[in-house]
Amino acid sequence: MNTPDDLDARLTRRHADLLVLGGQVVTPAGIERLDVACLGGHIVALGELRRSWSAESTLEAAGLHVLPGVIDTQVHFREPGLTHKETLEAGTRGAVLGGVTGVFEMPNTSPLTLTPEDLAAKFDRADGRAWCDHAFYIGGSAVNAERLAELERLPGCAGVKVFMGSSFGDLLADDDTVLRRILRHGRRRLAVHAEDEARLRERRVLVEASGDVCDHPRWRDPRSALMATRRIVAMAAESWRRLHVLHVSTADEMAYLAHHKRRVSVEVTPHHLTLCAPECYRRLGSLAQMNPPVRDDGHRQALWRAIRDGVVDVIGSDHAPHTREEKARPYPDSPSGMTGVQTLVPIMLEHVHQGRLSLPRLADLTSAGPARLFGIEGKGRIALGYDADLTLVDLSARRTISDAWIASVSGWTPYHGQSVTGWPITTVIRGRTVMRDEALVGRPQGQPMAFLEGTPTPSVENPASR
Ligand code: DOR
Image (cartoon, rainbow, N blue to C red; front, side):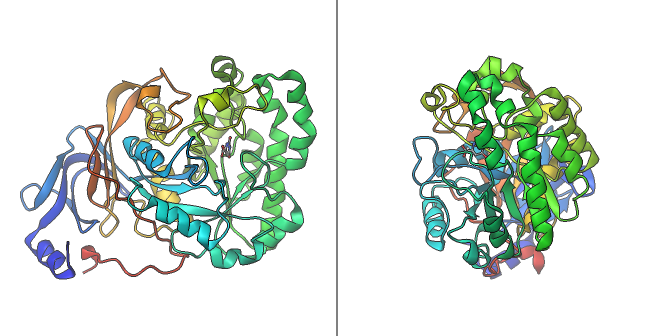
């Protein structure tokens, strides 16, 4: 155990817990060959350290790129209540195997996460079982709208999430009166799943008649998404509330959101950037079924343009596992959702390899972006004083993604059989190596994340602040 005096002495002696040596480090200033010294969970030195520092352990990172720890701001880990699909243990194990150091978990579990007790129960379950750092969303609904200002400030709460269109589970707030009540209570950025429930209900007959999963994007059409996005953006403006529109999937929404960037942030997912209708539905059937749906190439190209234009702030996986048996139900009774937390980094590195985005831009979308939008304390960049969360990747490693590699209880990925160039090799969380040379190390020691706008957490001893 490091006492403050121990840490002081260690800093003076230049003896770190961990030295990461010789990697190409992605810093706010660009990509540089640097060594990284980690002590007491923080980054305490950067530079040419091989001769001047010693450490309890070292990681040789020559030939690797060192990214700030990847934060996946949208995962569904299904616990409590739906542990036959996913658990906090398996979900976070998949995260670290995939190079992810922190996750925001969603409230459509059973029971829903609506009260302080629900939130506390999730932290209890995560204690000693979560492999990565974590925060949990509170669901916003008619039953807790007036309490949200208090709920969103609870320690470790990522904020409030609203489902305007029903997707999976009972969490729904589709009525303008309820949405306004939610928006009026609280100050933090409100995360929304924007699909217009009334239009979805009206159009469901289409797919009930056809029973064809290829019609999924026709049922939940671009207009359903745009209608909901416009409504919530307009309502949020009435109460000066910041918004985060989750998994934006259409060209139409991107064109609209580009004019509302001052208070509205935008997430896209790897599956909307990668898969393409109708091919993916023909090939994968309901395994490609997701809400909002994977759409055609025109929409996919618009999402890439929005990344290049800076309209997109973060990439979240929307990891939403269902078992193969559940997915095998006849469409549209098959549930929507696919795994994604473990494949986020490999799939996005393949896009880097294909030249669709740069590594620093990816790091902004997966580390600095989440920290900036949500005010995560101490995370999101490789800089002195920040948490020593590092995702070490090999940009030239060629691997084939397979179901067998997936840690999720549901045990499958839509990318089974896909080869990628670029792979997560080692994951470091607060200076502890949790995945090394593609294998897990140690035991789960994930901690709740802290937020600048949340309840202050007791100050953590940070040797770099001395
Ligand atoms: O397809 C989806 N499934 N989209 C979501 O946003 C939620 C999800 C789930 O929880 O299964």
